[in-house]
Amino acid sequence: MADELTAANQMENAKASQGYWLVKFAPFRTAWMEIVKRGTFTLRGVRSPAARKHLAGMRRGDPVLLYHSQRELAVGGVMEVTREAYRDPTSADPRWLTCDFVPVRTLARPVPLEAIKADARLATLPLVRQPRLAVMQVTEAEFRIIIENASTSEGSQTSEVRGVRRRSLDISE
Image 1: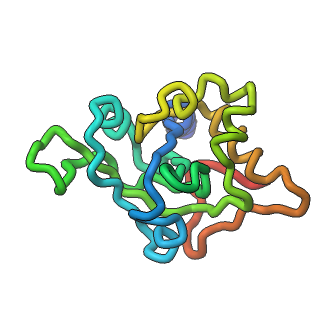
Image 2: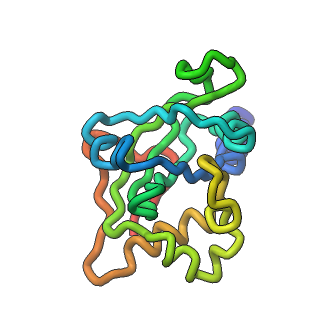
């Protein structure tokens, strides 16, 4: 009985400490469908101290929204952290970090920045307040609101990426 309670407490603590994230990346460098095709994504070349702090805070299994910056300006997919922060091999400076991700879900409808800014519930979202930040933590509520906005059109559904099991977050409609 004590072992069951300990295991339940550990699971609850892990769930409570789960982070929710948004990562921005230019689609002309790596498009969402290319990430899906490859089955993996490594964020490289991020050189912001704030983004580095967020990369260091990511834990295996944390859900991550992928936002295409510069051209599409929309959240288009959900990923999961598969490898926690490690030294970015594209830099000689060991302070710069990267993480690895696996695509989990393609959103039925990308959620454009205009829609995010128009939703009063997302007014404090770092994407709105700090638009140049490449990696940011979001709340669970903000994460879910964005997922909800991707599935509000009639008949739309997110599609699970083949061969990937959702471990950390149920994002079904």
